Length: 187
Image (cartoon, rainbow, N blue to C red; front, side):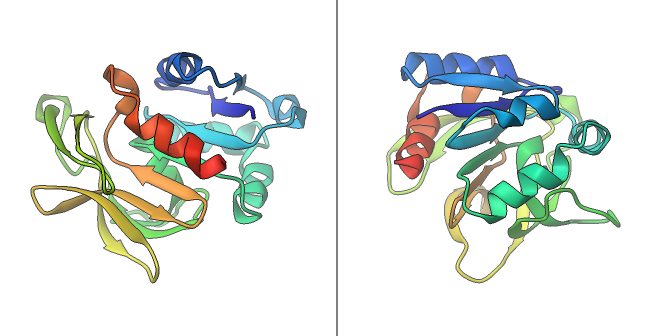
């Protein structure tokens, strides 16, 4: 098993460190040549979704990665990664991958000062640490989308088939639950 981490912007290094702790081989995707390597899963990190979307298009990564996601490649999108996956972004005319049947609200928790830490349940597991930084949340889910996490009645974690989207940053805590869950999705 090998997992690719999109490394255009955002907290990609921290995701790689989590995978290293789980002893999962991983590498960075920085340009279109990188996707020629074999990989069994993809992580889309937090950061700035507009910048990442623009770079995905400029580097000719958007369509090839969308095709792989649609073909069943397991993908974990955290914060901005969730926005990249979402079919719809509230108050925005365009979306990016548009593979996850949800609607998200960008920066729904406000500016940087609105960032916070909490602990809550994830999937059917115990409470885990959740760090939110200018985070989105899911305002609408499509058919067959499983809600994995809520904080204050707002949806902050979903799964649909091969796609896992979360609003918070699991890479910024010592907890390995979300990354372990994703690895189990890959098999």
